[in-house]
Amino acid sequence: MSQPTTSGVVPMVEIRGLHKEFGHLHVLRGIDLDVPQGSVCVILGPSGSGKSTVLRCINELEDITAGRVRVDGELMGYREGTRGGKPALFRLGSRDIARQRARIGMVFQRFNLFPHMTARQNVMEAQIRVLRRSKAEAGARADELLRRVGLSDRAEHYPAQLSGGQQQRVAIARALAMDPELMLFDEPTSALDPELVGEVLAVMRDLARSGMTMVVVTHELGFAREVADQVVFMADGVVVERGTPAGVLENPQETRTRDFLASVL
Image 1 (spheres, rainbow, N blue to C red):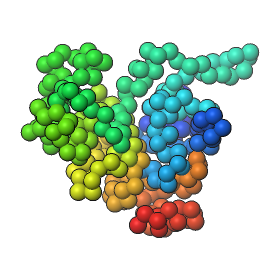
Image 2 (cartoon, rainbow, N blue to C red; image 1 turned 120 degrees about the horizontal axis):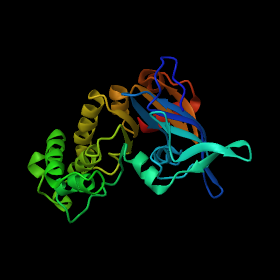
Image 3 (tube, rainbow, N blue to C red; image 1 turned 45 degrees about the vertical axis):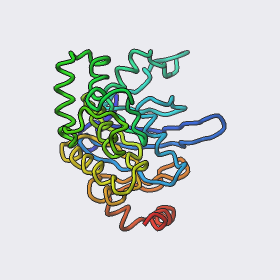
């Protein structure tokens, strides 16, 4: 099990020594990261730095090569045991992995909505199939969440009838419908036209204020300054610098961080 932090609280996300290789490509090279419950961690970095891979390892969309990932103290994807008298990891079965993954909501760059379903139906679908909620219960929850993301008047619209920002807000509502303990956002505004970014960030700000634990990969520095409790800068598969938004964004200590910030400002 995870060890409590100095405050005596087990982090919502605890990553130790995380490595991920794709063939000969070593994408993550020993990542350590703690995300306290109820906090917002923003991960910044250039393309190819491994940011999105970290999220995919947390959510078990990628098998890890080495290390440990824990969510709320539970080891993700594996159980610990012994082999030949030595500590070893054993991969969990698909049912246990699905149970663990159900605790985590993830929002991607692309919205991945079902095109043949309305916004309301998109938010209902996994509730019915995975959580086994009745149609009435799932529909009530969908209505509540669409209202929360400001889309009550678009509930019966199909994705093709919605703007990119509206589709992304439906995707956020769909993730929240599973009652996650943790939300992961993988560059949720990068596919949007600039004028639509604000409406998605507003929903994310509301989530942060509600106390949802969030790990966000983004280039939106204004969002990081305003909402993040912790900013992590990654490059070449390692954490180069971490700290408060003011510390990392306003007074970076590492040359690599300063160069990146200069390139995106």
